[in-house]
Image (cartoon, rainbow, N blue to C red; front, side):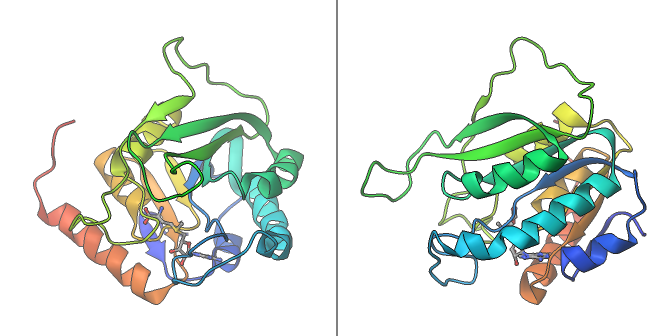
Length: 224
Ligand SMILES: C[S@@+](CC[C@H](N)C(=O)[O-])C[C@H]1O[C@@H](n2cnc3c(N)ncnc32)[C@H](O)[C@@H]1O
């Protein structure tokens, strides 16, 4: 399968073409299937029951494509995590639930939302040990809703994805993102000299992500 491409297709279908034991890390942000979704429709808690079979197939396929020791970062929230955990832990060692502290507040009348979760898991034996200074609470500002950089309702800040990539891969590694949205993971991979395979099912977000990548190549690379 060609590397450094975003594929406009269902990830379950597309992943069938990825060779087994070829992926170094998965960094991904599945729809939370709750609240206002990326297509603007309102979801409900019970909708998550409908998505269980989907995640069963997805995680099984992730185990197949991942190398031994591959690390996974899965963005989620407090409502979706209870559905994902029992399925994920059948296939991977779930090592932690990182708290992404927004360092600011969003809407919410029962305590205002100021965090999300990131599941951190490993395929098989965990090889990496983080330094004692690496905490499981990350303080990173989300994309400002009014910012011109905002391309997707659920867009994640580059800084967040950069941190995952740098902590859990080395240059030349292959990163998989099955739900690429506006292409944040792809851009972070380009900036950090990693290869990527991304899938995005929605045609308009796919086009947005292609434009974003073209802009990365037309802009001078910033030293970080
Ligand atoms: C939470 S958003 C990801 C946002 C992304 N992290 C960003 O920074 O832009 C999830 C994306 O997954 C896409 N998606 C949903 N189901 C999919 C599937 N089966 N295969 C591929 N993409 C899918 C949605 O269209 C949506 O754009």
